[in-house]
Length: 109
Image (tube, rainbow, N blue to C red; front, top):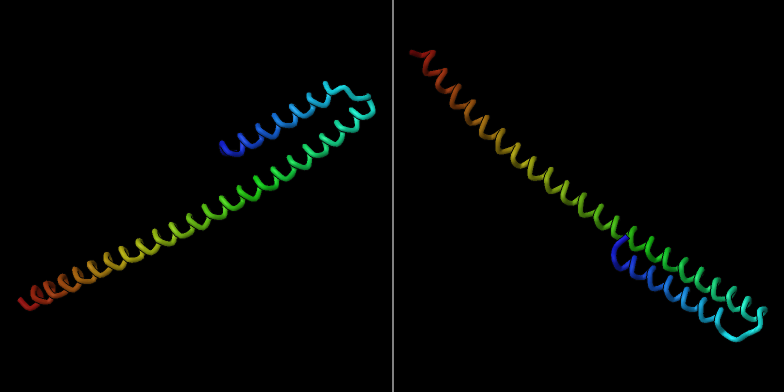
């Protein structure tokens, strides 16, 4: 999890704790306080669920982007290797032609 995700979770947790403490120290009847606590707990659960879904989507997007970047880098490396292999083959073919020419001269002598 990155820093912004940690910060977001920390802010949500802090807000939930603050609300819970505020409700606990409010001068209401026990039944009203319990109802408020239940509502706040449900709101915090929903908020945390949304945050988790958002974080999951961001991680998936980052993974997909990195995966695409890695694939494109691999294609580039393979392409470069292919060109270099062609260069090596061309150089070897040229050397082979030179050696054949020398061999012909030596056979004639």
